Image (cartoon, rainbow, N blue to C red):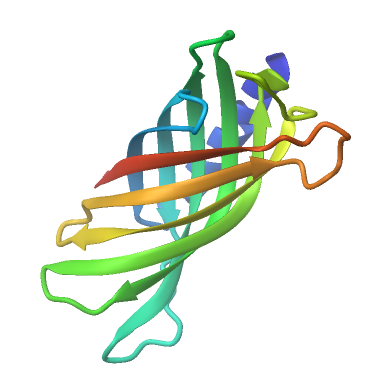
Length: 172
């Protein structure tokens, strides 16, 4: 657990260095897993402030995501994770509402190597995500996201876990 707090402090310091140069948002999410585990996520997002493949249809952009997730299980004790991920976003053109799709791969660190009846093999996990949603003028965003955590075979125990969540992001 001490490692998680050290990593959180380092991530916060690094994010604090870039907050003045980039648009930032606070993310709130609530979801669940197939094992009836509720998840609650609080995160910070930092836009890359870059666009690629811009056209009348939309543009490719992205953001850095750092988050804390609380995993509330019904069979065993809870779990906690810290994650950091680059996320690519294709934002479709629109006036006041812009639909988007997103995908990213990053890293997560869990406080326990088990949740419910699953053994994830170690604290380090990869975080893969895919989602879609709506961005509104003023920087507010709502969406749905599927996130998969796995150690990619780095440990013999690799049950992995998926979380499906609704999220809301508000600008800072």
